[in-house]
Amino acid sequence: QQQVKQSPQSLIVQKGGIPIINCAYENTAFDYFPWYQQFPGKGPALLIAIRPDVSEKKEGRFTISFNKSAKQFSLHIMDSQPGDSATYFCAATRATGFQKLVFGTGTRLLVSP
Amino acid sequence: NAGVTQTPKFQVLKTGQSMTLQCAQDMNHNSMYWYRQDPGMGLRLIYYSASEGTTDKGEVPNGYNVSRLNKREFSLRLESAAPSQTSVYFCASSEGAAAFFGQGTRLTVV
Image 1 (cartoon, rainbow over the protein chains, first blue to last red):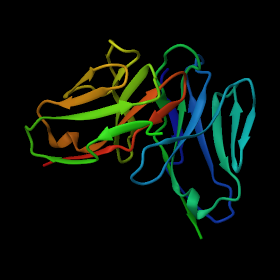
Image 2: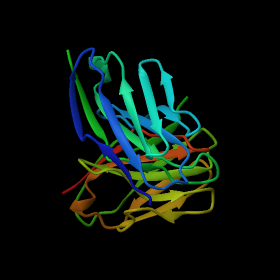
Image 3: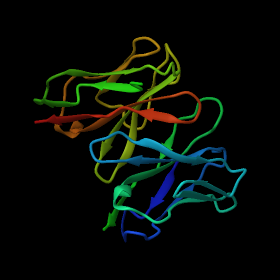
């Protein structure tokens, strides 16, 4: 009930490509789905988040797509750049009250020049 | 804005030694967390504190203890370090759903 499954484990795309990272959750009580970006030697940083009342959210080149019935959500990076090379973690939690974040296992993205 | 500050950034311990990892946040958040990050394992929750005065075990608490010293500070103690505790440790804080992480402590136990 608490798992968040993330795929792929690693991903290589060329500059300008659109990497897609997928996550699936089990607990239907989750209603807040953030993505974190982590550069080597740094802590994870909140990148973008979505709630299940919308099917898509865009912030700059980053888009989250959300499918409530399938309990899946994904991160798309438009016009990817070498500077986007990082590890990306999806997570799930509840927006109100106290609920621990449940993280996926991470995707290491490499954007080649 | 400092956010979440962890000390030290790097540490090498011998097996059996003890140490305390320090964490402080200046965002007045109620909840604080300690995670460890190992290759291929993602972020695993060690302990958390939902609010000042409370602490609870996460997924991997064995070999660790924590203290929520006050609202700002949450420390992680290794009483008798083991090579299996070689990892990168992250402290985080949250108010509501979004969590903010420190820069991490890279710990090596030899």
